[in-house]
Image 1 (tube, rainbow, N blue to C red):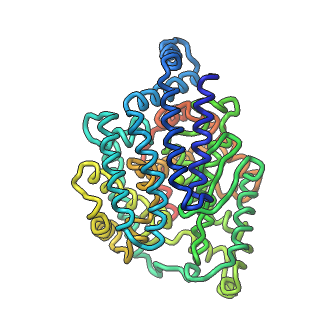
Image 2 (tube, rainbow, N blue to C red):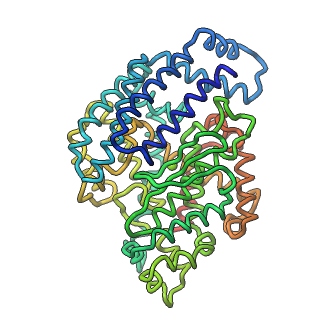
Image 3 (cartoon, helix red, strand yellow):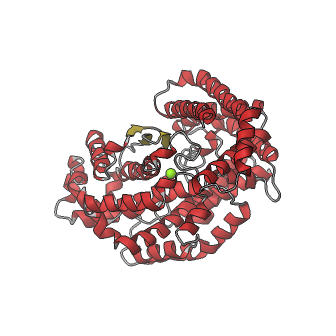
Length: 489
Ligand code: MG
């Protein structure tokens, strides 16, 4: 374990460096940062491949009578060892360098709505991802080994089957909502400006209500909201501020809080170990989406902050005059419509955004889609799935940070996690009663968190998604989510 602690320390500083790139690093500092990160990354590889360390891991693997935690550690270490053995160190350095630089360029390209700035960087990342997939090896599809990095054991075919199982019923629900009498695709609050300082105060009040303040969490601002876990008692989250439409930054705070809580509630004894905090992105996303959708978008939650939201600016205050504030907020936060932006999408059409990205990523890796064609392909697929096309690339192909980070194979975990969140809701309600009553009180929030700690968080990465579900007597089925959506909408 003391040997692993050095690797842990390197990861800790890599995480700090990554967080800094997204938040405070001056643009000119990126070359030096990407160089430093590349070197630290390959140093961690060297330590991992040190014969003595390797022998320790292999010896542990041969050991019988391991407890679940030890088994989890061996599993995670063996996976990392496999990764480092298959990828040459010059490749790891090149990948790290290319992706940290691309993140900076992506940010500029998005700001200036100029895909041509980002395209050569993306081209390079796609080539590196194809290479990575070759190095890691696969039987059926080059997407398989990349997906497995984010969701252990999942294959491209699993995702195909998963998406096929709910594409149609989801489309039906989406259509039905839009056919309801009195349906509106926009909400006036989307156009109203708000006082950013006041909104920031609400964010902190929300985090207080969610009892995050004493847990080691820090909130900052970035182009794309994210969570970076530094340690079990130090998790950084960010949000973005839209010039109007305050809903988005509130939802991002709650979403990222959900990710943070998973790490913050991990058993302290796992600190500095390979299974500290969550690795499965599906499980992670089930936590963020649970808090965002099932808590943050609920009536009792909106009611708690109704007074604060309705006084965010004079124009907002004027809008709410004479209206049922909670009803209006609920409509605004749960607006269903074909949105162009994934992070702003409603709970139903969200998954169409993921399907679109999954299809594009598969095409990029197969070579059937070229990066130069992406803005066009994007528009065509948006038309197919949502019946609308973006006017700009900033609102289209440039909207997400993931490809600039080299995270190809990541997107399906968003849908996996979202469907999983409905299973946790089911299980939690069996034990604690309805969510609505729990959300109303801070004691209820505490009970929900304790439940999540007991059933999900405390284990960190001890179990894979499948094992964790099995432990809770469940498997990943899509019925609970489809039922939840039907009931709600
Ligand atoms: Mg997330």
